[in-house]
Length: 219
Image (cartoon, rainbow, N blue to C red):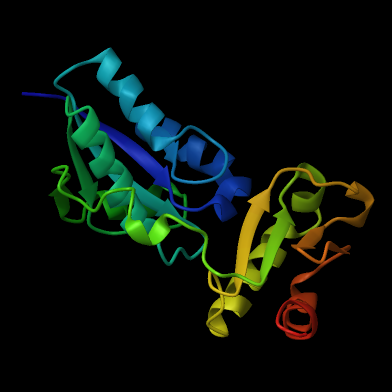
């Protein structure tokens, strides 16, 4: 009988500020942490490490999210499927539910849900639709460096994503990328819009709607 390893997978880079909590939960449960996006250990790297330690071990992936992720669940399956197709040395399964938070109780609740096996037949990482960037008007960079995070960049980036999603322009007219330090740090939180090279300082969640309406979608 094979031992099963538990891996808690952070779905979105918006949760990077809370990874310490996820690592603490993983320690309590004897689990490992992996990240689909942003900082932290990648899911592929974590699976590689587990496979190198003990061939024959099975792995259960449990999605952990504090911030709402509209695509994280799909990408968890895609990335896990990619690993199984290209390595294929572990039995991998994904728990059926999302934990609403990084606490022990939330993760245990997710672990208790029905799991499905990752077979390698999941949707691939590549697609003809992703060969070129979409015909966007603005490319917006949101700084998630240490000073910006300390001054509310988490709320700013979440509000920006929500507002663009509400208007139906996210990843269409406006592409958003979360970055490391952009400078000038005294203006934290900092947001930059290209190609017009507009820099916004001290951008709070309450400023997002005006910036989107007057600048990002305006003429």
